[in-house]
Length: 305
Image (cartoon, rainbow, N blue to C red; front, side):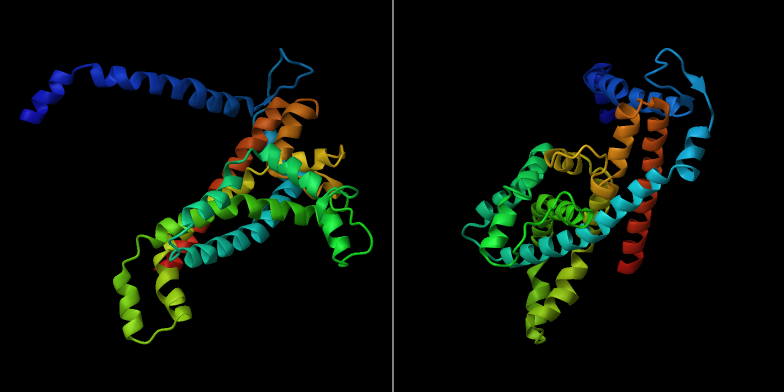
């Protein structure tokens, strides 16, 4: 009864306090998203800015059945994720396990490794574009001084090498973030499990695979889902990397670096500004991300059980 009276006394104040957030959320998130969904069913371009022609599902049909570049961008994005994400997760986990028992200097190391994650993607792209520049890049200079190569490698002009550079960017950027997540997960594991394992004569490798890794499964599930979502959002690094090399080709050499977000940007704001078709690409991407995230969570949950 007392609780009900307190709630009645509050009256309209809770609604007034939450109103600014709700209005902002509806105005700057829900409305743009719903409007984008509506225009995905229209033929609306910058050429005919005042004309929106309703075309039904034609944009979506074209995306999934008649647009090879859409599927190439999806394939490129998945290839980058399949290679970069396991390497980033494994390295982040191993370094977190090694650092967990370090007392002096651990916070400094964490901060240094975490800095790339909060660095602007455009800055990261420019840094790597300069490092892997064919003529003045530090990477070619170092490899030639070490005698590893005799001729300069065209890192950003060859599709094979440009793909490797993007993989390195993804690992360098996300490694510190994954490491911090695993460090937080390690701090929640009860030391009694490790003490019992030592009594039973288990070595470090057995403890890692039988105790540490299974108990970190919730963190791993979160990291995989976050990595998949982040991988599908890859855009600034790849585009800046290609632009920094002086190339004007969308997607870089052989369109190897054409990610789904880059293709969405090109269709929506570069190539004739096809707003309706670009919106259809965005929501098609949303569907694919949702499916992949669901599969990842389902697979990891079943494996854990």
